Length: 272
Figure (cartoon, rainbow, N blue to C red):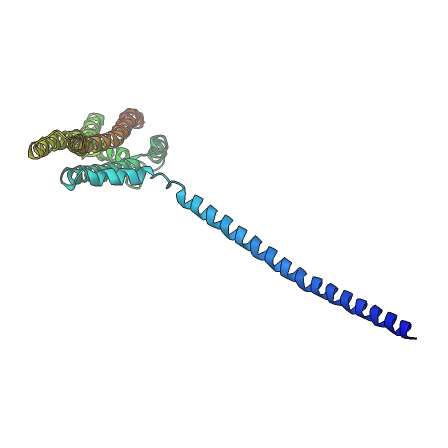
């Protein structure tokens, strides 16, 4: 009986001991899990920190052409750079005004001649003059002047067309000489700024008492920037100038060709 009790007691103690060991293992497992999670979080934070350092170490994005141009313009100094910029603004203003005016002066001469012919055959000179008044452009104005002098004869019509054509050509070319002046003036101002900048550079050398590469390079850079911007302004205005000249030539040629056709039409109408 004593042995049975002893066995039961030993069995109970072993069961209790095993239970405690299992509970202890279960308690330690979450602790290990928490430790692993903390380590993982630390590693993740270190990785993010390394990526941030790498991102901060990356070089800055290069400046755009507009930003570089603005920076160089400021370095060139406000004295001559401001004058060169003023030349660019005035030249562009005149060029844009001329382009708009020449564009509005364009006329479909073939359609206009056809409408005048139909008006002459239908209702006569008055209707043809009305067609010219309602049509925009210098060609219609020239034809209108010719129709006004129809009663004086074809010779007078031709003379009025030639005379008024010269007036219209002068209006088309108005302001173009200013653009040409600005094209020549911009590089001259740039060269003047360069010369003055070089003089200032030599003054700085004389004041320092030594030829320092930093002083020489800085002075020459500022001096040459005025020339660069003067040439840029001249190139831009030259493009606009050539376009304007081509538009004027096209309109003048169109006026001459249509005027010949108009004279032939008036001769044809006069013989009827």
